[in-house]
Length: 257
Length: 324
Image 1: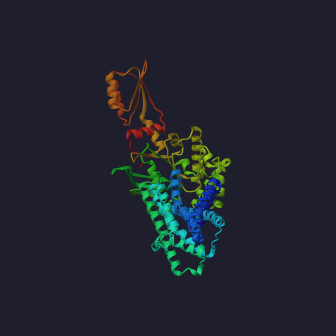
Image 2: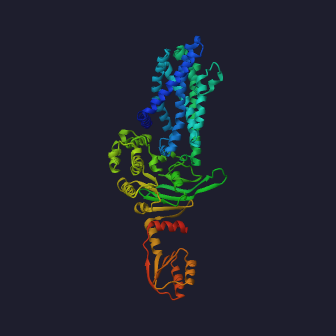
């Protein structure tokens, strides 16, 4: 019950901030949409006309997941930096629920709200391009949840680094390109990427949304890799975060910015 | 009264930036806080007060020593210990400025796992008691500093923890708001029955609301006693001796040598010495100095002393006075 109350409090806070600062939210949507239009125009005018449809479909899925990955992975890092700067980080550390739980519920809230926005943007991009993807919710949902779990693990690692170094904005900029590489490159082209976080999940989503694969088309092996990958990165992320937290408490870095 | 916080042999040092040297911030600090007590944790800047408070809050891990909260070690049971403690560490900066007064109260309670329904009546009471009801839907960034400070204390109160730690609760407030915050703190003790630890430079606040003080200087506890005892102790020793004549140069030299803290003032007809007899036999030394020139003593008055003067004497004089 306490977990639920914690989650509700954080979901409400995130919702209030999105609603109260609507111009920011709208600016984010427009930025997303206009960059997409630019990329789409590139495929139409410069790319090979024979593969334009397939390329567009890949672009939609990859771009949406790149955006999701950035929001999930960077979100906790930004939040830690902001909280330390505002002076509220130590207050979070005074909660008997533990900060990693607060951050996990905040991340989940962010994901829920961002996914809602992304679904709107996905349909907007499909409408703009005329390329309608397979939206098989039953097949996509479990893959998506596991993929996001892996992303959250990386988010926790970034959060741990943010607690110690605080000034991680330059690193977060570079991270955007790393996330882009992991989202855009397919496992077929680089099989070793299967060990990297969330790559397998995005690959499976591509199979569902572009090739129309269903729940039964995905093998047990694929599911096993996805589950192991998600759990390993999530647990690893939380452990690294807790290690960094302990170091920060020893060195007195929680309040310093 | 049974103890709620037991701090024992606490040590903490920080590494200097870009250096291999360490600064000893807290050095063998021990004290006990009893249930329902208001303890003032005092000391000059850099004395180690905030470090001590943060270690009690579990925000800093001590190098050695232990802190027990309600009998439980706060290192081994950090999260369970936090059930008994709430704190205002950075005043108005402890709030979310983009949320309203009510939203802040509800959010922080939610972060402790409480539902909005559970805290409804408590929120209403706090909004009324802290005179924030009319501002409940106002964004925090539009409130005055005093209002923000009151809200930060209300947030700490909402947790219903037995102990509240307040680091500089009146810092940066104007006289009127400072007085209002002081009244609120008194009400917290009287009406809500909480244990409070206050760190402040505002000695009026400390003298008015604290039962006992622990004074830390250079990382060490130099005094642990009740305010009344300290005032009594220092009042007994502080005197103003009015003389019928001026002191000679030789007498002045001897006075400064024997009583370096004494202040000598003179006007046209008489002169006076403000003196602290930290040992009762020292009074004979003064009379010996006066006897050299048979300087007449007109009056000897015991000074009234406030807590700020006591604090300054303890900190500057290296006083070491710990109650048993």
